[in-house]
Image 1 (spheres, rainbow, N blue to C red):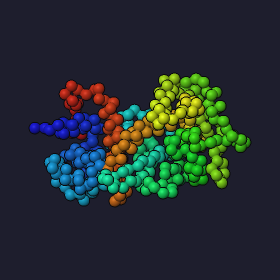
Image 2: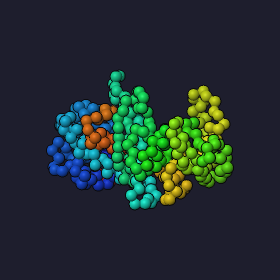
Image 3: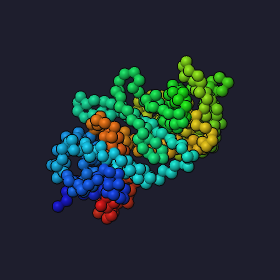
Image 4: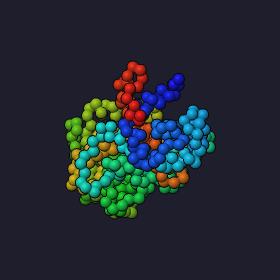
Length: 371
């Protein structure tokens, strides 16, 4: 007789990408007949127990044995995790396509890198805290770099300077990376940057050197979805100024109302007084970029940031999942596999949220993609 845990697993499996078992063999995660597991589904189930629930390798194998999934050592599970890196990546890529994110056409050889970071607290009262810095390429959505650093001390915060940058790279970051120092770092390496503007930390100048009044410039954009671009300078202390493109789009009235509602609720919770300029800035999406105008028009830049924001929805889930678990620090393959496993669960959660209303009355689909 099936338990409720088994039924819940079937519901989860119903949302998996089709052909998951075949992908396991195509990517080399499984090369020969499975010895410890009854199926590829059981192997993935065990990996997700380790990755998703935050259990250590040893805890995972004990739980798996008790549940009748597999009798395997923690060393053998680690080897399976390493081999599963490309499999988990392909599962992530397939789920990402299902979200409907349509990336604009890019010139040959142009690859964008999305950078982000998160705090990871390992289990237990004395669990270690780490900061994970990672970057993904578009459109492949491969993790091309990650680094684990302490959360305390100089130079450990989120910054573009945490990442190796090559000439010709196209980097994208959110507000947390909106600093003149980080932008200068990227420019000094012959790379390009696109970043959401934090109006508190990134001042601008006119090309002639005088201060740029961003608020006054924004008020000239009066209609929803209207865009504007200005040529501005960004200058870090003791560094040469960087010339770039300041682009803004006015949100829809509904989006403005939602943004204001969130700001007011946040200010009320913290018992703070909202500044009028904060509410004014919330009417716009503002980005700074050093991307060339060809092929990146104003609209093209804003469209790429919109796509980054869509991926950020998955990253938000990923960050909440990253807070649970023993971070594997054995080697790059196991660490990336762990990260892809977390991302797979984040994307799966997003998919389940979308299709919840489409479940059959008995609780899950008749078709089983992993079967």
